Image (cartoon, rainbow, N blue to C red; front, side, top):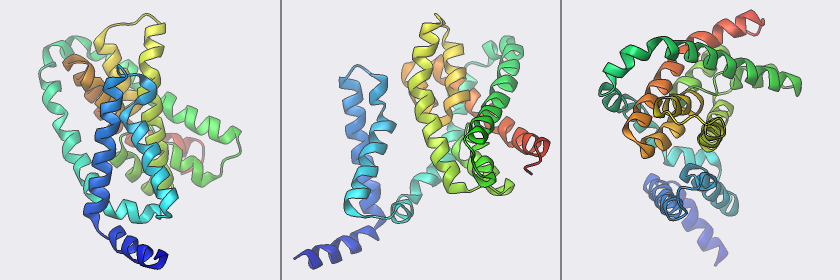
Amino acid sequence: MKQAFAEVWSQLQAEPVVWITFTLLVYIAALTLYKRAGSHPALLPVLTSVVVIVGVLLLTGTPYAAYEQGTRFFMFLIGPATVALAVPLYTQLPRLRHLWKPIGVALVVGCFTAILSALGIAWLFGASTDTLLSLAPKSATMPIAVEVAALTGGVPSLTTVAVGITGIAGAVLTGPVLKFLKISDPVIHGFTKGLSAHAIGTAKAIQVGETNGAFSALGLCLNGIATALAVPLVLALFGLF
């Protein structure tokens, strides 16, 4: 009986539709729970989904490589989804013309802070050079971060994990921190989410409102470009590249 089940499960693992359907159902359930809980940050759908999916992979003994292969279609969708974020941003162009200076300063400060803090903390804990190279671009959106890591000698798989953790942490913590600082401007909230939590933060920002989502998309795109330019510079400065 166990052998028959193992054979069936082995065959199912090779079918992309199984993992795509499973992932969608888990996310829909997580999103429903999130809404019923009043959008509690601890129940962020991405976080809940990751916990459930990782748990299932561990319980079934499924290698991550098999899951990644089965859900590769989602990776393809990241590019078009990122480009589509330009639509809400277009509606905010008049406002953007008046805010380009503070946005530029916030971008430079945020980008270099993210890179230097990641390198500094990892170095203090004795991380290897490969780990440092992998963590440096972790605040950029996934496609850019993975490509930067590959070009600079990092480990793309480790970068993928770092990007995911960064996005989830940023999406969960950004709102409470800004609320504590008594900052309510949707422009600041949105840009901060996109800058620090890329696509995951932007997904949360879009749920809040149009302005929030538009400026989060702007932060995501600008920080992706800035990170791609800044990471090689910082690594070269510290003799890592």
